[in-house]
Length: 291
Ligand SMILES: NC(=O)c1ccc[n+]([C@@H]2O[C@H](COP(=O)([O-])OP(=O)(O)OC[C@H]3O[C@@H](n4cnc5c(N)ncnc54)[C@H](OP(=O)(O)O)[C@@H]3O)[C@@H](O)[C@H]2O)c1
Image 1 (cartoon, rainbow, N blue to C red):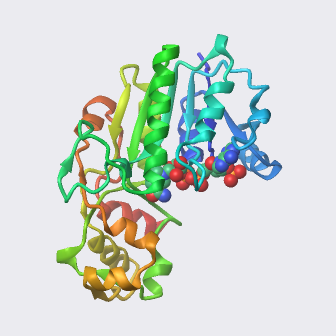
Image 2: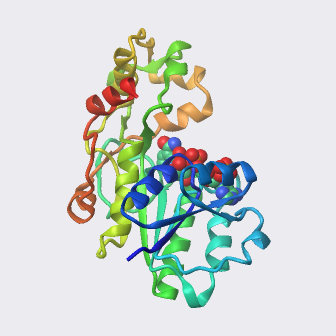
């Protein structure tokens, strides 16, 4: 039976999710805040629903009736919560709510964990404003889901990489990395595999609650830059001490260096059983070179 899903935030990952849903025979709608986005969606076989999460009035006409609502749009870049998610959820028509909401959050909600392996049982301790907004959004969605009896799936996603999503410019510019022994752990997921996880979260009837997402093979952030450089035949960036990095890198770059954790993805593997095409960087980067 053909069912309809709505993807809110139908950008790179959303388009990949749409392809999986379309291949599974579902009808896919995407929210578009501009005619350009609507045209891009149409070219991908995705029906456009007009709406801008920053303009709650534009959401008043939503009709509902979708089996799954994927919320993949980011929160605004300032503020303490996620008014975009709130505006969307509060504008959904009561009588035809989705069965499930799949929400992409960030593994940044855990804050710094000193390199520990971190499962979903670890209490969130976000350190950046960006991660605090995500944590607020998770809580908002959880409360809303309980209130309405709707299943909420929250995916805590680390660094997304893939074709067009690699730090090649940074490497070419020779921006330094922190020397390996001081470098934090980083976790990654290929964009196609994140889409696979989103799709599995929607498809598996028992999927509910919070899931860490990654390829399960964290290495240091410096290792990541070195491997990208090696794979693309670029010189490895120079390595500096963490102390020096604090003086020369931008606050945005530093914020990623100040947090170290290894995501335990046991729950994702057991319960979502996603078909990961790229279970480690080696295979994922090889696919990026050939893309
Ligand atoms: N980069 C990472 O490593 C990382 C890590 C963890 C989580 N994430 C999150 O993963 C999610 C998916 O990422 P992505 O790469 O697919 O992002 P993306 O390509 O930038 O797509 C985001 C989409 O959200 C839409 N959007 C933004 N503001 C909107 C608004 N006010 N109203 C309606 N739509 C709006 C954009 O619409 P337009 O097409 O109109 O611009 C865009 O299509 C994002 O939430 C991202 O923050 C990313």
